[in-house]
Length: 142
Image (cartoon, rainbow, N blue to C red; front, side, top):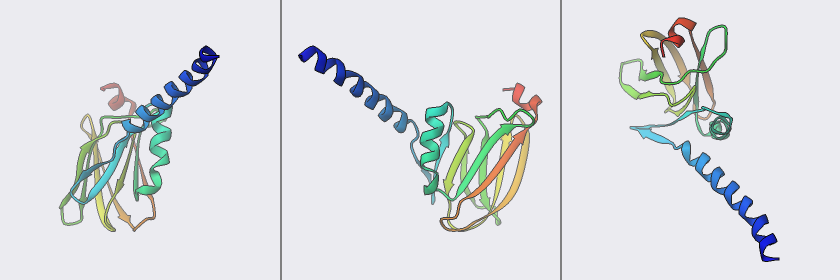
């Protein structure tokens, strides 16, 4: 009976540990007034990240034109319209969620020298999404 009980409990414990390890892989970070998370490599990490999306008011997604393949290692810089830097980081995956004070921002992203710039209005708890796509040539340079 002890062996049967152990055989039933052990997989549950291992599953719980893997879930905890996966959740801890997506850790919120803070720079000044901005809290953010980045990642989304693999389905489990993507699901954990998406589950936290409601806590953030800006969502960024990085992919390749024409294929939809996701990208990581994207340099990200978010400033206000006066040029004050609110966030400067490199993505750990194709997604970045940030919680910014309400206002207008300039989001500048760069991958291998191919840079894009978009202006965005962020309002309170309302989520605003920006999508950035790069040419296949840039993706191949990774």
